[in-house]
Every structure is written in structure tokens, then in C-alpha cells.
Image (cartoon, rainbow over all chains, first blue to last red; front, side, top):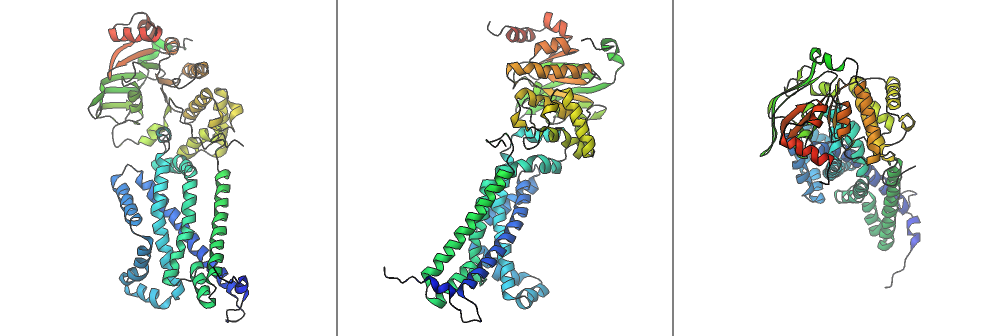
Amino acid sequence: MNYNWDWNVFFKSTGIGSEIYLDWFVSGLGWTIAVALVAWIVALGVGSVLGVMRTLPNKLLSGVATAYVELFRNVPLLVQLFIWYFMVPDYLPESAQVWFKQELNPATSAYISVVVCLALFTAARVCEQVRTGIQALPKGQSAAALAVGFTLPQMYRHVLLPQAFRIIIPPLTSEFLNIFKNSSVASLIGLMELLAQTKQTAEFTANMFEAFTLATLIYFVLNMSLMTFMSWVEKKVRIPGMMGGAK
Amino acid sequence: MQRPGQRQLVEERETMIRFNNVHKWFKDLHVLNGVSLQVQQGEVVVVCGPSGSGKSTLIRTVNQLESINEGEIWVDGKNVADPKTDLNALRAEVGFVFQHFNLYPHLSVLDNITLSPMKVKGMDRAAADKLAVTLLERVGLAHKKDAFPAMLSGGQQQRVAIARGLAMEPRVMLFDEPTSALDPEMIGEVLKVMKDLAESGMTMMVVTHEMGFAREVADRVVFVDHGQIIEEAHPEHFFTNPQHDRAKQFLRQLLTPMN
């Protein structure tokens, strides 16, 4: 293969002010983090509530959560994004439509759509992990909590969830990484996150290989750091005496 | 170990637990078949019977960890199966000790004990800590207050579980085979704590195979088989002169398992 690698391309001017191509990557990374982090926080909250709902004795509540999971897990992410971005706004009340389509900066409306989409998609997956975490606990734990007079919310808050979340840190970590990787779908509705900036750099400079190599490297380092952070969290909350975790 | 005024006062005491013709089915299995039983305040009743006889189910119906299909159970004057009964308030008055301890593994020994007084009764941290330390001294584990359950032996865990039950200052303590999951050398330390508790006047209902405990501590032994109470007697009578064949057979198997 005859390709002249030119790593200096990132330090060349884009022709816009004093901006260099590396700046595009920095700004793209910023959007990627802003999308993924906010979506993750929402997904964790919504998913935890749904996961708890699936383990409740109430048939209606657990049924609603099950239906949610089936719906959001069985439709491709990209289809969901298009629905949120192109379809849903048309069904909003008149004033909200005007606000979303005209008053908002296009980047902001794309941002909102992608955050909602990723958050609700990931919530279905978090839900399943929270549910299995709760169901993996010995039956005796809920019996012990009920026997001292805890209400259902107290039982979840003080006994079941602290244990369930510890168990599911590893699968939650992979979901946490997935949301960063999945955030690249935002490029398809024009949000200038990391992948969109990479494609734009490739088109402007014709240095496609360098651009995608850098993007790969950034995603890789980003996810490695997240993983390191999560294993630190896992160690931090490890229960003394269990799973070889004595301090 | 005769407790002061033990026998003669029983009639005058309040009835703490009353089963009235209780039935329960697990699908087709008739686990409780017309159980009627009374436990007076301050009384220690040992429930024994072959495995699968329904004795664990019986004790779990008292605080409604198992619901019942028919009949009534009154605990401290409240009908537990009545939907209007505040089950959480009732459970707070009834301590329960499980076969497998069921300590909260993510909490220290101290926090295991203080959690329910703080969350259910709204006790403040300082008072709850003080109470927990007192209870841990009572079960001989004050030095383990900062340990986590996984660091303790089975016997120690069960003693913490008893302290956890006592922290709610219950009016009744229920024990569901509290020593069955323990290594033989740890059974004694748990029975000792239970004996002390009985001597302090606690009302206790104990499902156990520890016949030594029954003989020494119980006021009454109840023998259950096939979901029915077959025999109900003073321990001395039960052990020396059981009336029913199934009780005789059960005792024979328990006392001389090789024959």
C-alpha cells in the first residue's frame, strides 16, 4: 500500500481564524462527552427505577417495565434516533414545535434528541441489569428486611439496592462504555461530536487514515480511562471479607 | 434454670400468639392443616417435627413472611392476616432469627444492628450505637462491632442476628432453626445466648432439632407432622413419655440416628 502518512495534518490551519484541525477533535470530544455523560446519568436513573419495578409484586408496575424493555431493546438504536429527531417533534404541541425547530440552535435540538434517545435506549439495558442484580440476591435478604418492619422502599434503599449495584458494576461498566461508543450515532443528525468532526477533517484534508486513526485512539483512551475509573469504584465499594476483598 | 414464677403464672398472662384453625396450601400441598396453638407472654415454645412437616412455614406465618389461606393468627392482640393491620408496625415488634442468619453483608456488624432502629423507629445514631453496643456485649461480640459479616464464623453471625432482632425491642422472638446451618462446635454459643434470652423473660417460639435446648429451656414442646400439631406437652413428658407413634418414631430417630 502506498500511502503517505502525514501526522502534521492535525496542526494545519483549517482556514477558519487561527483554528487547527486538532481543535475540531477537541471540540468533537467535548460533545461526545457531553452527550454520553448526560445520557448516562438519565439512563442510570430511569433504568434503576424500571429495574426495581420489574422486581415488584405489583403486576401492573412490573408489566409496564417489561413492556418498556421489550420496546426499547428490540428496535435498532439508529431507528430510534431518527424517530426522536425527525418524528417526535412533529407531534409536540404547536409552541413546543416552534421552540424546538426554530428558536433552538440546530446543534442544541440535535443534542436534545440524541441525549433523549441514548438515555431511553440505555435505560432498558440498565433496567435488565438492575433486575438481575436484585434477583441474584438470596431470598433471605428481603425476608430479613421485611421481618424488622421495613417498608418496601426502605428494603430496596437500605438492603437490596446497595448489594445489587455492587454485583452489577462489571456489566454496568460495559454499558457505560457502550453509551460513549453509541453516542457516535449523533453524527447522523448533524451533531458535531467526535465522529462527525473526524469525517469532516477527512473530507477537508483528504487525510482520511490519519483522521480515523486519531479518532480510534481518542475513543480507545477515553474508554480505557472510564474502565480504570470503574474498577477503582468497584474496589472502593467492595465489601470487606467478601470475594477476596479484605482490606 | 427455673425462671422466677414460671409455671404458676402462665394462666394469668396475656396470650402473645394465638393460631386459630390456620390452613395454608402451596398449590396442592396442604402445608398447614388446621393449626391451633397459643403462646403466652414469657413462654418458650419449641416446635419440632420431621423435615417437611410445615414447622418453618408455621413460624413464618406469625410475622406474615408467609401468608395464610384460612384461619386467624393473633399476635399481641392484632390479627396478622387482616389487611387493615399495619404489618410493618407489627413486624417491628416481632424479632425473627433465620436459619441462614441473613445479615446484611454490605454493612458492618454495628450497622446491621442499628439500621432498623434508626430507619423504622427513627432512633438517632448515637442512641442506636449505644443500644447496639449493649446488645453486642450481651451476645459476647462487642469486640466485633466494626467487622463485616463475611469475616465472622457462623456462630458469631447468628449471635449478631439475634442482637439485630433484639434491637427493635420486640415483644416476641421467633427462631427458625437457628442452629441448623452451624458447625457443631458453634451451636453451643448460640443456644447459650437463646437460653439467657429465655431467662430474661422473652416470649420465644423456636423451631429446632436441639432437643437438649428443648428439654432445658422450653416450657412446652409442640410436635408437628404433615401440617398438624400432633402433640403438645411439657418437655419432660414429651421426651420421657411421647403419646403418638409418629412422635415416638421422631424422637427415636433423633436420639439414636444409627438404629
